[in-house]
Image (cartoon, rainbow, N blue to C red):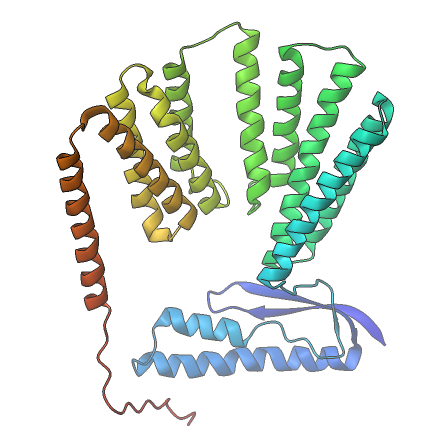
Length: 365
């Protein structure tokens, strides 16, 4: 007898982990149901004793129990969801293959078809394939498949938006800012429907892009053309708003990254009023990015903040420092500061190990 069953196991936090085991013989399923609670209880007792002995912390105990009481799937079972991870090289090759496929396919369509109808059909096909395949890969499970599926879904979303704009321009004869407004609204709504405040970074990015495109199109419709500095200040404030909402939006690291990139890019453009103010605002924003990114180890935000700091400092030096001697002093002071930080860091993380260290885990008795 072969059937599909759901094996539930309690987690240390008191929740329930549901493991789906498909096409498992009935006798094997019964064995799993008897074995899973025993494994969980056994490791809970062991880690509790280790916590009492001071060998590990309670968080480490929860992590060990969760790991050891993970999905119990026999070798002859067929998992309902494939959770295999790709290697970094295989994932990079997948992205490279997607780039070559899109580039060669677009070139083929542009060179082979001069009429609007074949191009429209090709764009529609690309949108359907990108969205369908992307969503299928996301449902396969695993972080690498989730990232690849997110990229394909974002590609399909952009193709669908381009299709809407192309149809409006070529067939409905809609012109000007109306096309941008409709395309922006479509991009935003489709992206939000795919994102749904879940850990889907690329769908969040396209949703933000659709929002900004819609706002710009509305300004164009209202014939409101603010000064560059004012527009940059509005964009900068919107980026900081995303940063403030990072605890409510997902993925939080991606929301922080997008918000900081938007704010860091817009801050120097406010220098139309005063160049010093734009540079200082950029440096302050970069400092905020470093302060927020360090606890999370958000490498993207740290890198963006470092690039923004470098650019704004170069701008300040070009404006106010015209002496080679002054630049040399700044260079030497900065280099000395970096060297001191590195030395202090190395000294603080140097561990003196004794000649012999014997570590014994408590017995199971």
